[in-house]
Image 1: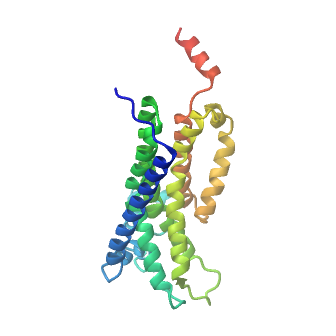
Image 2: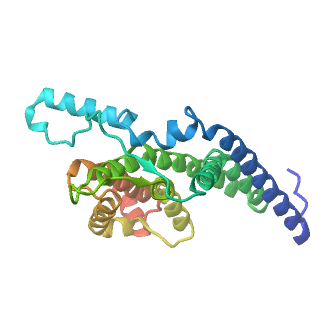
Image 3: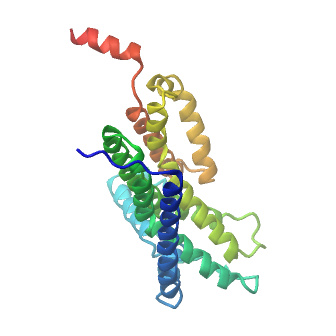
Length: 283
């Protein structure tokens, strides 16, 4: 195999410049496309972003069917929140003159960021690949692929479960009957984007754990030692993300988070003592 010619500092800088240029160009193009398809009665904003504000949202319909199926099996399961209420609707109001325009722009940008995420990861991979050895290239290639998949799974969990459950609870919470519930556009979008992208980042936890393990900073014994603490912490985090009092709503956030914790432990290298014990048992 021919040895690749070593690049100078200025060659690396030039390659970085073109990497950033292609990445920004892809974001710009997808943002323009998203901007064009975002508005209108059948646009992405109404059909995707505002979909959890209505009772016909797919997750509400699924939970309604699940609740009815459980109740048909046994009346004792009639403890879930009522997701079959066809009158559920959240009114979104705008109180700032330029909010709709800036929301149109920012939402188009975040949509472009999600859609171009695989391409951006490929650009990063292409930039760092020449500096890696052959065995490192194989490992890092799978790291980028896994990271991209986990990010999309996290965003999907945030959009289809975490945000709708949070919205439904907070929008129906009543402090006083004299208060009219109206949600501002800025408040809705802040929570919408935050919860979805936070879940996308949280689902990168196995990848981060694997990288820390490769650096020798994290061992599997850490997860075993602090499992009880992690369960309590994840319950608190789930309660904070979905401030609901019923365990059903809480479990929709807690179990994916706990699954990520165990998956992270799986990707982390075992301690040397544990490996020696396994070798002794096999002998």
